[in-house]
Amino acid sequence: MDLAAYAADAAVEATHWVRWSSALFSDIIKGLGPSQDSFVLDVGTGTGYQSPPAPRSGFSRVAGIDRSPEAIRFCAEKRLGEVRMGDACGLPLPERAFDLIFATDVIEHVDDDRSALRGLRRVLKPGRHLLLTSLHFRFSGCNAASAMISVDTG
Image (tube, one colour):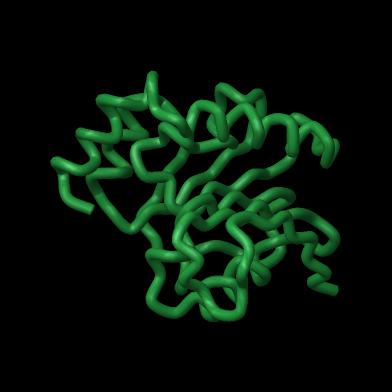
């Protein structure tokens, strides 16, 4: 995305429909029962306006990845935790590090969705959860708009 697109996202975040999805994500998270010290990753943070695991959600250990320097700048201005440069297909993160991963409305922007899913699985701890949503139905073999996936990485 370009700077104008990020600026537009940031400008409407207080009234955008995604505020509803953040409440839904909060309910899903509560149902999973993670502790507040769970290590949480947000893949494709964008401007942070739909970032469910942002520090405001109460998690003490939150990391983010985005491939845009502009997105990272917006997140830094909002103090949304550590957001670093990276891509879903080549996550610059250690194996089995995260308790909970969010990839909300990201997978449809990835050229190689299977590679991205393998990378997400690689950094997710065994028996933990990945919240994956897509509005565009573009990724391989999936007909659903959203999915909660528990991944066995053992």
